[in-house]
Length: 355
Image (cartoon, rainbow, N blue to C red; front, side, top):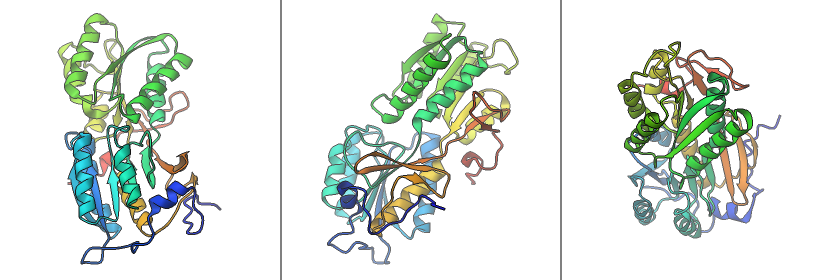
C-alpha cells in the first residue's frame, strides 16, 4: 500500500522545493552546542485561546523531534515578523516555522529565507506568493462548507444568518467566506447571509452582530469564523434574551471554528451548537516534524498521508498537508452528508489539553 508520506531522497517535486530543502553546501544539520538543530518558531499572536494552545504544544513537539527552539511573537504585525526572522537568521537557525496572518506581505521574507537555503514551514496560512517547504493547515474551504451545511439544515433552508468573517487579507478568512457563500447560494438559496468583516477582532465582531440584530431581529444563525468572537457573541445573545436552549423558538443557532475547550463546553451546555475543530496540537506536531524532515534533506509528494490527511500541491514549490478538522455538534449527527462528533469525544484536542 502507498502510505502517501513518501520520504524520497532522490526525487524532488520542483526546483523551488529543492531549494527549500536546503541540504546544500553548508552542512545540512548544523546544530547548537548540544548537537540539536536550531529552529526558529514565530508565534502569530498570543491573545486567543487557540494560539495559546498552539504555543503550549510547540515545546513538546520540539523535544520529540530533537530540536532546539528559538521563539518569538509577531503579534499579528508583519513588520515584527520580518524583524523576528532577521533575529532568527542571526542566531544561525536551520529552519523556520511561521504563521503569518497577512499572507501577501510575507513574500519578501520567504524570498530571503529561500535565498539563504533556510527551509520554511508555514502553519495555518499559506503565502499568496513564494515557496515554502511545507504548509501545515486544514482545508479552510471545508470549514466554510461545514458551517453552511450545519446552519442550512438547522434552519431548514430559510431565514437569515450573520457571518462574522476573519481578516480578508488572510487566505483563511477568504477561504472560509467564499466557501460559505458559495455553498449557501448553491444549496440554501432561501437563506440570506449578512457578511461582516471583523479583522479577527472580538470587539468589532460584537458590535457588528449587535448592529445586525437590531436591523434584523429575526436572524436565526451565526457563523463565527474563529473562536475570537465566542465571548462577545454569547454576551450579545444574552443581553437580547436569545441565549436560550436549542428547543426554544427564540434560539439562534451558532457555529464556530477552532475547537477550543470553551467551545466544547458551550456546545455541551446548549449555548452554541457546533464548531469545526481546528487541530492546534497537530499544527504544532507536524510543523516541527516537517521542519526536522527539511533539515534532514527529505522530500514529500502529493497524496494521502499516514496521519489521516492529504498532501496537495498548491503550485510548483508549495505543498500543503491538509490535516483533519472534524465538525463537532451536540448530537454527533450527520448534516447534509457531513459527519460530526460530540463535544466530549476523546479524539478532540480541546479535551486533551491537560494542565
